[in-house]
Image (tube, rainbow, N blue to C red):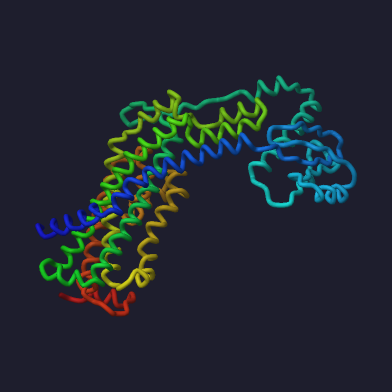
Amino acid sequence: MNKVWLIIQREFLNRVQKKSFLITTILVPLIFPAIIGGLVFFMVKEAESAKPDVVEVLDETGRFQFEDTRRFTIVNVSGPIEVAKKAYQMTKHFGLLHIPATDINNPTGITFYSRESQSIEKISELKRTINDKVKDFKMEQYNVDKETLKSIRSTDVGIAEISLSDSGEEKSSNTGILYGTGMALGILIYMFVLIYGIQIMQGVIDEKTSKVVEVIVSSVKPFQLMLGKIVGIASVGLVQFLIWIILITTVTSSVLGYFGMKMPQQQAMEQVTKNMDEETAQDVMKQAPTTPQSPEFLNNLSQIPFVKVALIFLFYFLGGYLLYGALFAAVGSAVDSIQESQQFQFPITLPLLIGYMGLFMFVLRDPHGTVSFWLSIIPFTSPVAMVGRIAYEVPLWQLLLSMALLILGFILTTWIAGRIYRVGILMTGTKVNYKVLVKWFLQKN
């Protein structure tokens, strides 16, 4: 055990003392706030300096009277559509909107012509404008005044979300917060397991090709070397991860606060509502999620057991890393270059990718569904799936079962990887395929 500890120290110190580690650890938390602040700044400036697009309107019904908005300047044209299209092509206008003679109650055939494909935001704005006009026509037809419609549309039914425990304890919750928490944790697990697993493989390949491993295995067993390398790199990843979380959170809040900026989603929401009439903007804001400054948001946020979530996240981070790290180490011991390892990387990362895709397709959509349950139980997918579910109050028996199976999975993969590692780490110049790996695994000491 003392030899394993020495290898762990070696792997940890060799990486932490490198300039690249220090630069990456410090720069990454600074780059993220800089990118966020820069994107928000330019988004606001672009929106403020943008000129309205000119839209030509050929209205054959004679009933649509569009007004200029902050985004569009309306120019009414007349004549046959073919003549209007030719005239439009002689201009630099944004587009040509053709409204044929149609039934106002069921308008069809409306076409927008432009020189190039336009953004969904601008096309949606045009659709919304036309829909509003059609609604006005229908209100006139049914003798419904705008004030009556406004009072109807302003009705907002709120649903308070309360989690009721078996003991009868009530606790408020917010599905938006739980969704965001699960998504963030799942993505982090996926990224770090993949990144540091590949680092293990690269480290093994480097030592194998440099012949350093031949000196090391003369004093320690190959399995001890593999285990020490995995745990050592895991320690580096954990330290770097904690530093990133602290710095990114602190620096991002400071940067946005210093420039008086709001979070990107709030900026985007404000820019969208500027282009709407007051009634529509109020409806959009009512449907928008609770803002991070609201008391309700803060109250729901405080209900999340962050200590429990952090500890569980740490367990699955280490468990998933150790499980996949052993497999990456086995691949690294079997090949002589990173190019040769590519044929073996996909089968290893495939279950991790399934867990990542399942996070969005099943876990976040239905955290207590059957597929979500199995994804969070199977060791190869549970690191990503279970952390995505954990904020949703997973039953204790499911959590314990998942943890136990992950530990067993790590032991199994380490045993399999160890049998391949003990042979492959000393083999050079051998053309490796799956048949060879099976042969090394079955080979007796």
